[in-house]
Image (cartoon, rainbow, N blue to C red; front, side, top):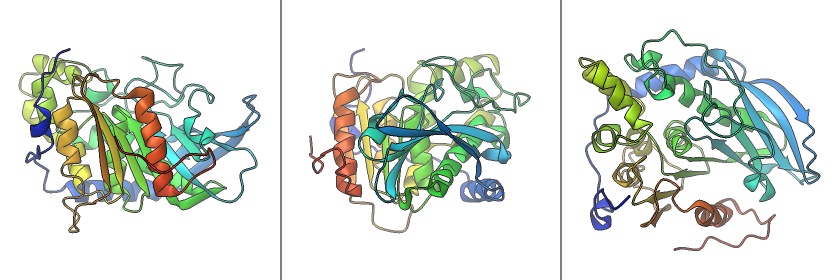
Length: 342
């Protein structure tokens, strides 16, 4: 795919007026308050993975509506003292898989909670273990259109609530420093990490790569690639639903969450990305912290990959994330050095 979005010099200044519903804050306050009324930890069971340097537990916590949400919790074996934690959210269509599939953060010396995505896991990887018991809501078959006509019914209201509860869950687990929790994700996971950044004011750091659900109206107008393409196809059939759909999506737009975020943030985008177009990523990045009433966070980092699509920087970007987070949380268990630029 050739370059198709705005040139980089315009992206770096791109801060569109993305509309927010007047009751955005009240909507999320009520949603999270209801979820918080239920004790967060449901079950924690050790798992024998055959990995001699790491310990893993199968965690179940109470998410949206008290629904059980599964997660893998992994940390270095025999680590001293409470550890900083990384809560990771998954890409669209992927479930938590098997516990040995994602070891980067635990191998680097962090406690790592990998949250399953309710009702997903059938498109990539090795599956998921968390059902979404709300199949009766109106909307299309995929998660991005499930319940899309009504904000209270929308799938991402549930998934984002799960994600906030995952932070509460990791803080309740033994051996975790509750004041040193970072949110991480790529694509859908990046969008969820930004949402958590806007809803959890005391995160230590946020890492969101190629985030989905940012400046959604532009994304739907700009690309037919899935998952946004699922919204396009839904509206191609439900021709009178556009106003209702756009209203629902305004409650989960990553730009609105980014405006409310306080934590240091590390982001990345490929300039040829048709899945999560770079202008939608910069729309969130350039307004990060803008609605907090405080000066915009100075601790912001964006890495641009001019010749890459949705894969972005892949392992190069992971290396940059590791070094950036080491500088913020002070971990040196893996011999990492302070973050470098570039």
